[in-house]
Amino acid sequence: MFRTLSVSRRTRRTSLNVLAAFGLALLGAACSDASTGNATNGKITVLLTDAPGDVKTAVVTISQIYLQGSSEGDDAGSRVILRDTPVTTDLLTLANSTAELVKDKTVPAGTYGQLRFVITGGYIEVENSDATTSIYASSPDYAGLPAGATVAGSLQMPSYASSGLKVKVPDGGVTLDAEATVMLVDFDVKQSFGKEAGGSSKWVMTPVVTATELGFSGALKVTLVKDAALTLPAGITLDQFKAKITKTGGSPQEAALTDANLDGIFEATFPYAAAGDYTVDFTPPAGITQFTTNPASPAPVTVTSGGSATHAATLLTAAP
Image (cartoon, rainbow, N blue to C red; front, side):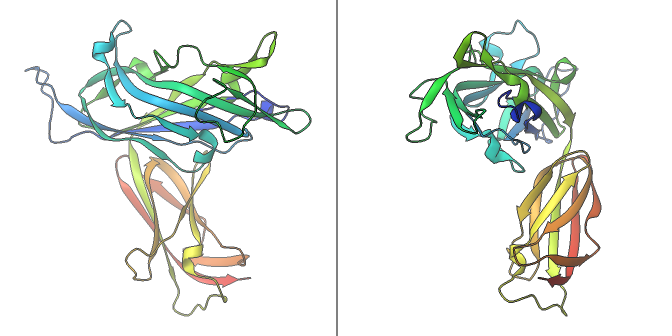
């Protein structure tokens, strides 16, 4: 995933965790037989997300994503291209959500030692000591800059537009076979950007990136219905509530509740929840200061590897 930025006095104390959740959803029908040498294919889905932080803006253009063979000496022929359509994203807007970069890409089964992002441009907006902000960009005419932006200096991004930003996976390689896997990649924003020594108008991107987790993903569905005896305050509807999940040791994620089937059951789905223990709660709309549910919120829920979990709640009271 993406992180880092050592900027203003406040930002120096903040670490922006941007996680790339790489869902490696592989074909279960095609099995590998090592004794015969038969190869098999898999499918890979790449998601990008982050956690909240104090950085003002951190925009990058990812022009290509590819897997590299496990050997450091492998040449371009061993690359498996996952995406070659450029996408420009502000990493901070991904807090508590995910961006789907690759979906169900079929790849040859095997062991891969690296995942690489080819980053062809970007800019950062940092706070100054007087509370103003300054923009540093990979080029003055970088297409991802906001209209009318004034560029104060350059953002150096050495080699990331050619060989790509290298992400080494845990244990030296990940083997894609018939299992469904999620890889969480941590891009440390606090450490990955810094001012060039002796050059006050230049910043340098030197990413600190590590694969922090390799495990199975799951899914978590949260539903909310209104108790038959409850009358909501005027102007308040159930779809104004949001479902909120928090993984133990992680940051909260929110999702809107919708009644897709028009049956009075409002639901929110978190399709790429990493396996582990969560608490499920609800965020009320403006105008509601107190509410109760059955079971009481927040409630514990466990997501298993490759499995799915459901938390069903009934809104009992809601008061201004």
